[in-house]
Image (cartoon, rainbow, N blue to C red; front, side, top):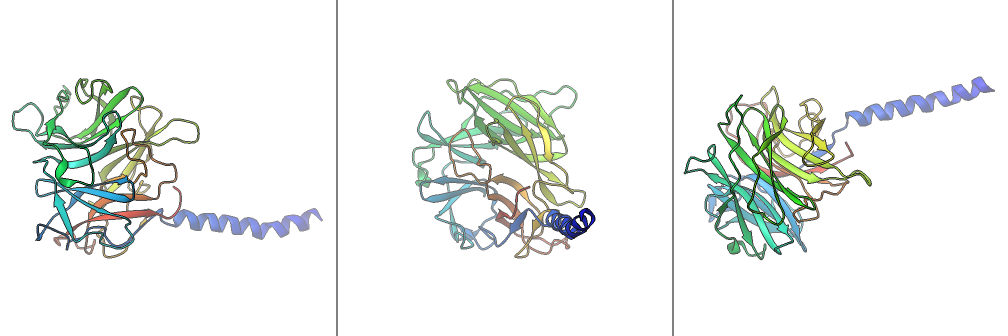
Length: 334
């Protein structure tokens, strides 16, 4: 009887192994038609849209992106119909671009963190900046950019030639600013909530790796345990951009790799099912969260990831492919 029972269970065990193996080969993400494509215009003219950011307010999603040396905006109630807009609106924020947008509760105002060209020689090419708005639905309500007084990065072993893509996240006491620089360095500066947006500390290196830019940091708890998720854009050996992820227990502690290689990425050609003629580049992406305040709280089961890429045949590297803003949809947990 015991041998018969073992034999009867053997097919079930083999089936379980087979199903597990198939699941491991399935992509984590699905990529369909663009949110904003090459036909989207600004003031009736073609526009190149990159560095997207998406935030939820009441019954609408608000999408910001870099374009024409500044920042543009569009909104939608849902993103099932693609593209979500045929025309975007330019914000009155001057040369501030690469936007991060959140609702800063202590002031009851929306904050847009970005960067702008450095003209005084204090910073390596780009300066961090901030704009504010009382009403996110009013694209003309944004204030002119204010340069944040973050000290320039110092690294005696490898001087910083350029730093780009500033990101702010708050805990209960402090405001943390993350930024990437050449040489695969992630920097962190901090100030207190009471002093923000002033009083920044000297930036320190928070992580070294083979990433190139676009740090996005979220509060991402695992059960009752506090945790944080960091995503960055990296370049694979074949030239395609993909998304890496790291985790940490605190914002001022060491980051540990989670899915940080091209063969096992957070999001890349190895785990994304492409559709609609995408080239395979996944650049400057951020997880889409339902919350919208300065704590950057990301729900455990988040479903989407916004990024910019290119349309066209990914095998034709010499072709000039138009940029587009896309949205990944999660098919299964990592």
